[in-house]
Amino acid sequence: MSEVTRSLLQRWGASLRRGADFDSWGQLVEAIDEYQILARHLQKEAQAQHNNSEFTEEQKKTIGKIATCLELRSAALQSTQSQEEFKLEDLKKLEPILKNILTYNKEFPFDVQPIPLRRILAPGEEENLEFEEDEEGGAGAGPPDSFSARVPGAAIFFEFKHYKPKKRFTSTKCFAFMEMDEIKPGPIVIELYKKPTDFKRKKLQLLTKKPLYLHLHQSLHKE
Image (cartoon, rainbow, N blue to C red; front, side, top):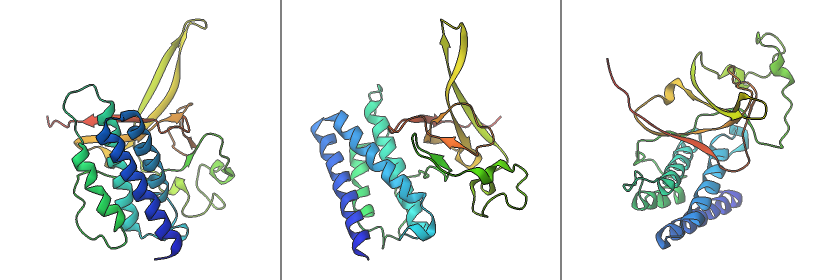
């Protein structure tokens, strides 16, 4: 383990313990902030390219699942329902997994999935996306690992609209979408993106720098 990785794991562990402490003390605002900040860091690591990460793909998948659990705990703390879906006791089970991520080889204790890999531009960030202009994906359309090569054939979109009284029309505020492999029973956390709705999912830009997500709970019924 390199010194950089050791330091990173120590910071993650300290952040998780800090959030759990706030949670147990009833300081819910502080706990939510800590969980969401850590979740964002973990999501970024889970999305890192292979040559920019010291973690294996399987380890990054586990890191992504931990991030999802943090988001679920944040959602539970903000829920008006009396029964929490993801409890503090559940969250505490993540600490040894995160601490020993380099050697962890057991089945993840919760049935969750990491937020899928997407090409994301945070507000204020710039990125050269010229290669995406060639929509046919022909020669010169970009490197083989570009986002366009990873986009499936179908997705479910959510558009959030608001009415503007002065202009007397309804405008799209932001949007989100679910990949087909995300359609499964249970909770899910998906990101919110700036308008206009990008149905091709090529130039995604987060709605805000703040950890703001759409929290859903899916129930599937067979006809």
